[in-house]
Amino acid sequence: MLQHCLDKLEHCNLEIILVIGAFANEIKDSLDKQYHIVENPRWSSGMGTSIALGMTALQKSDEAIMIMLADQPAITSSDVKQLLCNWSSNPEQICCSYSEPLVEGNKLQMHLTVPAIFPLQYFLELSNLDDNIGAKAILKRETEKLTHTVIPNTLININTTDDWDHWLQQLAAQHDILEDNHDEIYTQ
Image (cartoon, rainbow, N blue to C red; front, side):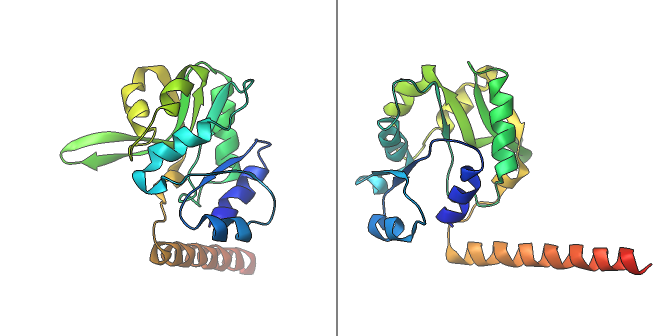
């Protein structure tokens, strides 16, 4: 799944910094090319520790960072390119992904999430993250200072092998439906 996400980023002309934790050796052995890898020995402490550690790998000339998770395999290269394009029109603001509003309790909540691009002024805060909240707290706090890109694929989040198998079955079913429709159109 990780390689699947990395392959999509390859088409976006980005420097990739890969932060890994659990199963670090197995992950490194499974990659099909060399990446700038940062190992997080505190991975079990939460996503914030991985983001903070990844920030240490940035170059002094970097003006922004895109945070993307490997558990969102439905995100496409086109989704990432659209996010980059929207961010480039206002590079002083955070540009995050947005999917359809979700009902949480009795309130309609915007689903602001990663992938997200954070400009330089957020680097210190991202470097100091140290918990499982990750960058989501910044997105929730900065709603007046961010732009967003509609990316419905962010709702597909894979956390188990069962999730992965279910998603692949959905893709296969969609493919079959498209193929059936294609055949039907050309036989009429």
